[in-house]
Length: 365
Ligand code: NAD
Ligand code: IPM
Ligand code: MN
Image 1 (cartoon, rainbow, N blue to C red):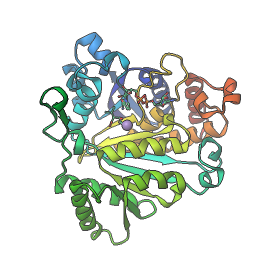
Image 2 (image 1 turned 180 degrees about the vertical axis):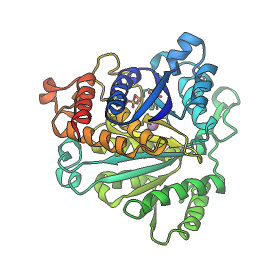
Image 3 (image 1 turned 45 degrees about the vertical axis):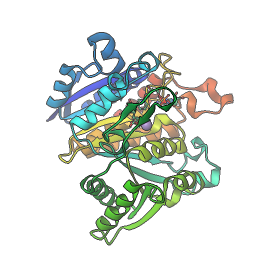
């Protein structure tokens, strides 16, 4: 019997709603496989500000440190938007966790499954062209973390500034992660940058070229971010691994999510050099639909599958979850955002989607 300690940080908005379904799925995995997940829930984000006075209370950080992996929901919302940046849930909790655990390598897989092209907002022939993209996003540096950042001056001359900064070491390690991933996929890395304008992007290209020499079996191409966002819509099948800096990866990954049908389908893994990771949907707390029981729980459930695959080495269990998710989508058990407006009255609730996935897991042999 394998046993793992999981820190469960549900957070705000739809976070607790979709986390409940991920927990059901982990229960089903315990039933079917010889594994136990000791799950400890901790407050985080706006909820933690309201209940504990800060977005990342010491007991939450200590719980994460003691865990084998972190399963994270989502944080933030209008209620906490007016706080100073450093106290907001996004920075005080999520960015702090990423930085604290050095979770530099963010993997965001987006795939249009054969037979599920109708879920994509792309034209049918484009959706059917074989879309399977892995966004590899640098997560602990770049313009998110560069210093100095702040404001200076007065009146109309007052100005704000952020610093985009990348070291060779930071670029090299995320490039290596992208090439390693490409070797296990279709052998192509597309590095996304703005090397026609940004000094950081020029260094990014130089180091990426150096890394490419160690991977002669992987093809490397460079693309500017503006063209990349257009090409993702025009011809997504050309992409295998998209290697991105922190900000560009944030933008491209939402676009890749939507290409598959919904923000609520995109899972992510954020890992450090030791394989320790935080697993969360790429989307946010979705305040516009929170509290209604209609959010899509699949991104959260697939994030749990990535946790099993990358941090806990439970490959068969991860496969079982992914298979059950595809079956559920094929069955047409879909939350409303995946349906046309005239079909929305047939929408499944968050809990119904979770239940359908559990049923498939328990009936697989
Ligand atoms: P969002 O991702 O929360 O929502 C964007 C759109 O996608 C909304 O229309 C929402 O309803 C939809 N959506 C997202 N997830 C969905 C799901 N599972 N099922 C169905 N629809 C879904 O982005 P936003 O509105 O820009 O941000 C809201 C808050 O979330 C902000 O405070 C933001 O900072 C925060 N945020 C947090 C995370 C995180 O915790 N990892 C990620 C992104 C945004
Ligand atoms: C994401 C989110 C975060 C980011 C926010 C909430 C800080 O948008 O994980 O994509 O920008 O990285
Ligand atoms: Mn984002």
